[in-house]
Structures are given as C-alpha cells and as structure tokens.
Image 1 (cartoon, rainbow, N blue to C red):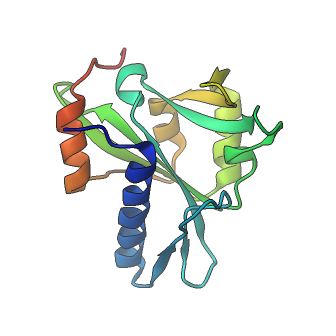
Image 2 (cartoon, rainbow, N blue to C red; image 1 turned 60 degrees about the vertical axis):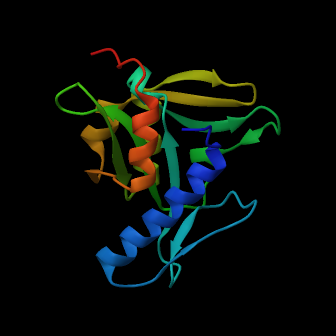
Length: 170
C-alpha cells in the first residue's frame, strides 16, 4: 500500500466517526472541514463538539500523545485549546491475541477529565519539532474512558495490513 498522509487518514476517520455517532444517536452529525482547530465534528444542534485524534505509533510504543502546547506559535494547542467537549483517541494496538493489530477507539465525554488524567499519568515530552505533549499509556487511557470500542472500517483494515510493524512493550 502506498503512503497515506495523516490528513487523508484524519479526514476519513472524521467522516466515519460522524456516521457512527449519527447512527447511534439517530440525529445528524457534521464534519468540520478546513483549517479550523476548534473541533473536528459536531452534532447538528451543536451541543456536542468532538475532537478526533488518530495514533499509529501506539502499535510500537503502547502510548498515545496528547498534544497540549504549540512551540511554533508559543500558545496552548490540542487538549489545552480545544473547543470540543468530547474527545475520541483512535489508537492502533495489538489485539488480545497479540498476533495482529486493530484500531481501538477511546472516548472521553469530559475533556477536562482527560486533561487531568493526561497530566497525572502522562510524561511531558517534545513531540516532533513543534509541540509539547503528554505521553500516556493506552491502558491508562482505556481505564478511565467513558467507553472503549473497536473501530473498524475497510480503509483502516488496509492500513493495518500495511503496518505490520513491531509490537508495543507489555
């Protein structure tokens, strides 16, 4: 499989999550398109705004990066700047048999709770060249989440087949 940009992956995931929430709640959800950092999707009535993050390095590290500060702009970003009141972290993880990878959706209906958990259990680290993140173990995120569920789409199954890489440490 050829390289897929993180923006293409994120756009696809946002559409799939909006469809999932719409089907679960029997009401429309909207995907926010463009260079808008406030949130990624929202309920049609605007009561629920969700931030969606996709983590592929979790298959190697067993952790998710929760961005909190942009060093490029010298201001809060990610969880410390979002306008969302729901957070969905979609992480690529070993399955229960530890022989293959699968996508796990980790949902928080209270972003302030997630921020407190990331601060308490995470390790602050510079991520890439332009952000500071809390690195939080996936099991910790799952333990305190509103819900955790498998996230499967045909697009994701193709990515998993191409990923194959090393397993996370236990």
